[in-house]
Length: 198
Image 1: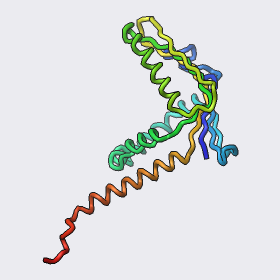
Image 2: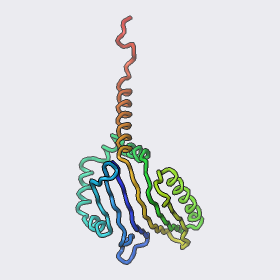
Image 3: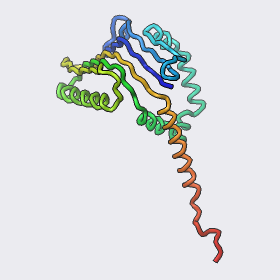
Image 4: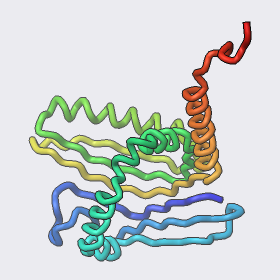
């Protein structure tokens, strides 16, 4: 089983456009789940119109926040180290890149900071592409500075990314096993000679 995310013609601008949004009209993000690597069992397409509808349903967001507060989700996450587990899962996910076309324009109020950030981001992206499993030669990115004495970020993204579910399941099993071992070690603090007779 695998999860595939396909991003087409996504453009973002930090300064709002005429319709008071930050993204363009023609983008789409397609989420697919496949079994046997080829048979689709779930598809969901996200467009700007769909995102607007979801964002407008504020009562749903308020209901979710209230439910999280009543169920003490934060306390549960602290108790069971959910944040730590998520970090471990993300770290062990093997992302496969089938296509990447990324253009970034970045500017800050400080020209020196902008000049520092451009090569730093380029280095991070190079490392990311090197670490991922590239299945295609279509790997391209460009990071350019904007010198306008204000904080700006614009980017354009197209890509196909894939994650195998087995990697997530394997990491979860390892974390559960590790937690059991830690629990056993904490409870088995009895000395080895407690029940021996002299």
